[in-house]
Amino acid sequence: MNQMAQCVTKVELSISCENLIDKDVGSKSDPLCVLLQNVGGDQWAELDRTEKIKNCQKPEFSKKLLIDYYFEKVQKLKFGVYDIDNKSYDLNDDDYLGGVECTLGQIVSSKTLTRPLELKKGKPAGKGNITISAEEIKDTRVVSLDIEAQNLDKKDFLGKSDPFLELYKQSEGGKWQLVYRSEVIKNNLNPCWRKFSVPLQTFCGGDFNKPIKVEFECIHPGKRQKKKSYKNSGIVRIKSCKIETDYSFLDYIMGGCQINFTVGIDFTGSNGDPKSPDSLHYISPNGINEYLTAIWSVGNVIQDYDTDKLFPAFGFGAQVPPNWQVSHEFALNFNPNNPYCQGIQGIVDAYRQALPQLRLYGPTNFSPIINHVARFAAQSAQQGTATQYYVLLIITDGEITDLDQTRQAIVNASKLPMSVIIVGVGNADFKAMEFLDGDDGVLRSVTGEPAARDIVQFVPFRQFQKAPREALSQTVLAEVPKQLVSYYKMQGWAPVKLPGAKQE
Image: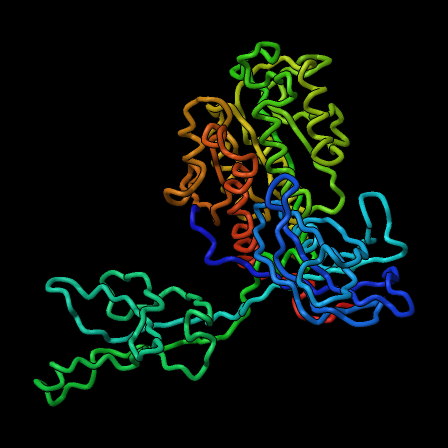
């Protein structure tokens, strides 16, 4: 669903170093660490810096470095360690003790990252190294409530009332502010509302002593004056109120969850002959086409969250050598027993090598490839732990043939640890894709079974042709953190390693 994340996730980085080189004559260096973020090309902007520690080759900095985290972006960072010998803020007049470049994704997926310091690329700074560990800053507690009411007044002329519930908190000026409104239950004087959760921060600003407004007895002042026998207009009963921890995307990632990335590529005849410049599979003189751009854009972000960097890649809708049978899930490297490609570059290489060997054909069937990934996701789900999540990227030129089977495949997959991203290339009509992306309501199978969660994100590539390369990945991946959390929440699974717990 297209809702923006509630607010930016903030991450705190703790820095320590060992074996720093000595630049001071007669004493040890006085190190400080600075954090820079790439803002495009060779441009870097300073985000934060630690304090200076005197005479120390093994500093553990107490000041934490703060940074906003976005899953859907590749955030390139540079950590520089300097020997500070003067009072000026400018670091250009201080000795450089070494630095390291990495992405924020690499840090959070490792939770703690240790790298050798380099004076410049390929030139180590002696035996110096830097350790960066990440922690998310947040209050993850939520208030979970289960509320019912009994014997409510009839308000409607012909039928019973249609009750709903509202909770308010008191703002600084004493005004009451709406925190939660329940669903309406039609024609019912004894309603039992769905269980719901509100972040503690929203509910009472994290302050347990703040008043909230829930009237236990529904008193109608007018009726009390008119009728001496009047007691109330019904009772509201809180069946349960629990303070629970609401785990975030980073809790799961830092807790050891891996994201497995799989690609499915459309090789149907409607793409056009790959040798012809107007084909969607035509590789331009500078070595790219829309399929390759989509693979690079999405793959570059996701690869940081997968330790082995081995990505299965498949094609569908082509006649495949040697016997030219049409296949809807063939390995791009033609090795069905080992369809894994080494890194995103490996997928690109396999695609370029496979293209001249295929006969583009049809029809456009999505369900085999969705079911293929779902089988792996189902195996992971049986372990009962939040360790493996699957993201399938399907790149297609349009009209889908097996819509009914695909709907069923997505509804089945919605109960598994997986998400499906569809990028539509070319100028076809993508109405069916928009239908699969449940933004206009819950996707249902042909038999009427609803999807357990919204797991499909569709974007047409043409919207991004003139946009910067990273705009595509930011749009298609923005939903993945919420989809991953919604699955583990639905299962009631906590992260494998809990945040704040001391790891042995």
